[in-house]
Length: 141
Image (cartoon, rainbow, N blue to C red; front, side, top):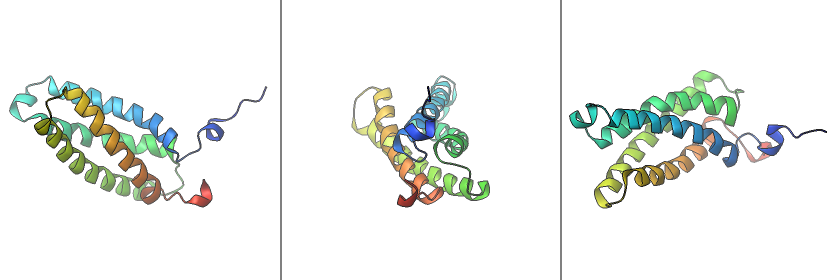
């Protein structure tokens, strides 16, 4: 019995494949965020700083996960890491601002804010990584 290959069921560059890898990366981000929030740093800094630090740490790891699993290694790693770090830096600034706004404006559980913010910025990251960093075009789909 011939089983379909992962690439046939979940082609590289698709939102579904990004979602699987992104789920792993988000879990890593969440663990870092929860650990930082449980330390003295939360009292020394604030919630927004914990978010920003967690985003920065997990972004470098996420680049290599997406390069290996979601997209591919056909472009030079020097180019993709520079592009990815640019995307993640913009995403970090934007997601930190939206995170701060959400915790200021809404009295809802902090983990719900985490989820909503991560989903929105995850879509942004997928699109920019797909088209600008790894250069997928419609001919490759």
